Amino acid sequence: MALPKFSNQKNKMPRRPTTTNTSSTAMDVTPPAPPPPQIDVFWDEGMLAHDPGQGVFDTGHDPGFLEVLERHPENPDRVKNMFMPDIVCIPIFSEYIEELVKADATGGKPLCSGTFLNPGSWAAALLAAGTTLSAMKHILNTKGKLAYALVRPPGHHAQPTQADGYCFLNNAGLAVQLGLNSGCAKIAVIDIDVHYGNGTAEGFYKSDDVLTISLHMNHGSWGPSHPQSGSIDELGEGRGFGFNLNVPLPNGTGDLGYEYAMTELVVPAVRKFKPELLVFVIGQDSSAFDPNGRQCLTMAGYREIGRLIRKLADDHAEGRLLIVQEGGYHITYSAYCLHATLEGVLSLPNPLLEDPIAYYPEDEAFSFKVVDSIKQYWQETVPFLKE
Ligand SMILES: [Zn+2]
Image (cartoon, rainbow, N blue to C red; front, side, top):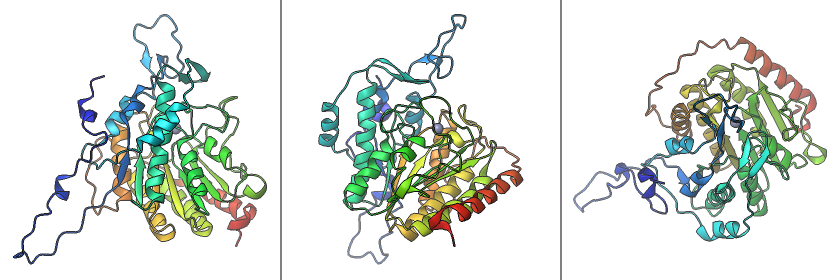
């Protein structure tokens, strides 16, 4: 596969031009400029090897009359566009990944609706999980506080014993478990992919060490691989009751609705939970142009969410923030929305990229009303939020 854009990046550490200006002499009186804000990105091009197939959108089905079959939406072009060559790349702990690859299992069959394990997929899935673990380890080992795992295949629908929704291994969930195993007492996961992070919820459903919050389109269950509905009453079980918080937003919710949900629901819940580390699960399929979503976030909305998450991490988790890539299927706009999200996370004073296509006259009244009703429900039902 010819990938000149990527081929020089793996295990190398290219620098932004602004970071290379380190020369100084004894005559200099100007103090050195502070280093530019930075996110450490974890990536391995082996993840491009997962071919999810083609057909009618994500079905893998060839109806016989179409001249051109469509590529599956979770195809490698998505993350090729998300990779930014001026970002500092961190070499992956290859021994860790090799250890995972040794546990290889072969496949070559549909696992559930829309989810196809083809030759190369399993190794890519192991790399995605290992890459996310490496990013978490980077934070746990205090090598950096802000890490982004640019991974595919995605993970947040993968449940402990069930592939689902293009996902094989729950990358973020495994990283959370690593954090707990490494002595983190409490971790909060905030998932803004347009779909319910049901796999992550399932993995920690009986735990009060992990607060999982998912903001998603009100899409409900989609079949046997996805029995969870994402409704507000899926709150966790036993010790974990109240520590899975679902925010099903009405279809069409845009920037103002998401910002309201963040400030009224997510920020207060995380404040009360007091995590030691934050995991921000991002999907650009909540954007106004995604083929797999019906929400209407634009770059401005993603930027604001990124800013709020960073502030939460700074205020409550000593700035420790792991960002994990999930969905996002519009090949171009997903990359722009990722960029905007990271601008927000880096607290940049001004956007570096203009939004090339956003136009959405949002009517936020209904989403505000839904958020208000969820807030009231939480205050009446969730023990740690009652006050
Ligand atoms: Zn999604």
